[in-house]
Amino acid sequence: MPKSRVRSKAVYTPPKRSAKAQVSPRWLVPTMLAALLLGLAWIALYYVTGGSNPLQTWAGAWNLVIGFAFIVCGVGLATKWR
Image 1 (tube, rainbow, N blue to C red):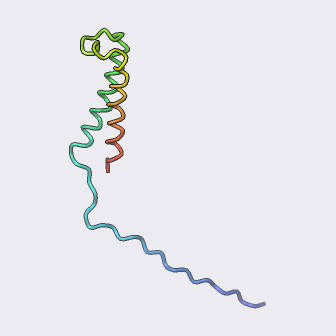
Image 2: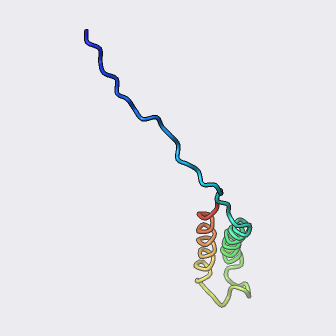
Image 3: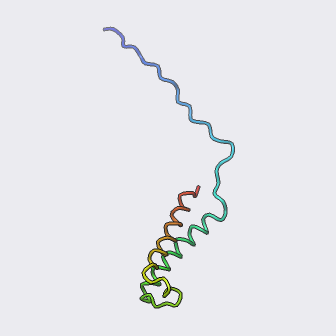
């Protein structure tokens, strides 16, 4: 029986790592957590007080948009975290 030919594969070499590892700035995580918690607290306060809180009466139904904007900013900062 004839012997089958063996395919030669190139040896895997992992990509070279950069000399400096990327590190997040020190302010990123506290700012991200603050934005997420502030957005959650803003929406919860709006629902608990029924919008009659002096801090939130001027915005009316836009309070939900403000709260979700804080949350979206927090999620956007979370994508930058290394």
